[in-house]
Length: 129
Image (tube, rainbow, N blue to C red; front, side):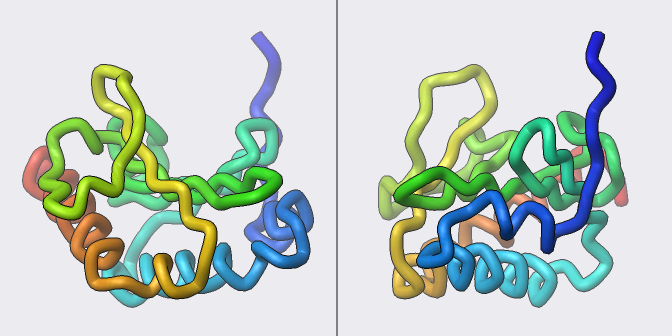
């Protein structure tokens, strides 16, 4: 099994296009605003930064930021169980869902904030933290 390469958020920013970097920064700031004690783990091999109540990606993580060429995926590890009244989330996996963020406006919308709060609260409650 290949070893995961860990890195910094700044290194992850470099993987995103210059136009999308402000969205990545905005999403990270929003997550930290919601959860100032968030554990951030950047896995460069995954091209993503995971945010969680602890460092374990799949069990303690609640959200991730993953740059693509034309958008940023804001992913939710337990997204299939989260309320999504705006119908923003995509994906068909057992648990994972994501929102394609293509603009600062969407990234700063109340619906995105609500999804992040729900994801954070779900992990805290599920793990008794």
